[in-house]
Image (cartoon, rainbow, N blue to C red; front, side, top):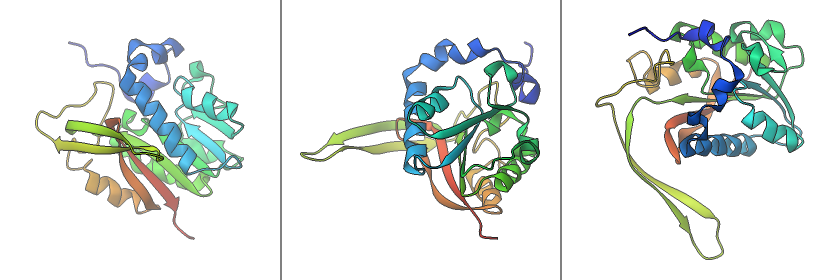
Amino acid sequence: MAVPLRGFEREKKLLKQNYYSPGYFDKYQLFTFAEQITLLYNHSTPESKILEIGKGNGFISDYFKKAGYTFQTFDINPNLEPDITGNVLELSQLITDFPDIIFCCEVLEHMDFTYFEKSLEEMQKVAKERIIITLPNCRKNFGANLQIRLPKRKVFSVPLFFHTTLGKNICPEHCWELNYTQETSSKNIEKILEKYFVIEDKGYFHTNPYHNYYVLKKLAP
């Protein structure tokens, strides 16, 4: 069986229709989009300048642009028609109008892990305030997410998940995922993040616990 093409070479050649495949209509992928929108909304304001790295199908950027946010997209793939085309490893050379927030979801695992820290360093140079990233976690999740509504209160969720590395595997298109190896363990990832940022918030999406998030504030100079 042929090994699937991964990394920069794969990502910069994907056709736009790949981002409208059946998997993107799966309800758990749609849950993830909703979680991403809420996460970014909670850590920004309509006055924030936002740069999204990894445009994908444009679901997130379209939503925020229609809501009146100053929102630019950056992607290595010209087929996706991003506002800025380029490699994240050259981000600081390509961005002239620095954003307040960089939003980078389900992107960094598509390149070899040796580029992870360099990517963070480039984002740290460009973002004025913080970056928000999400990463897939190879740990298996068992359990449930309870949606609870009390009288005169908003709905809130209570996640009841158990995590295990038994039978762990990663998506064929990914070069790595959280906790797949000791090098990519959550502990080591956070150690790298803390070289450049303060971890303001972290966790996993209750409606799709496969995806973990980190909200990172720039260290004071």
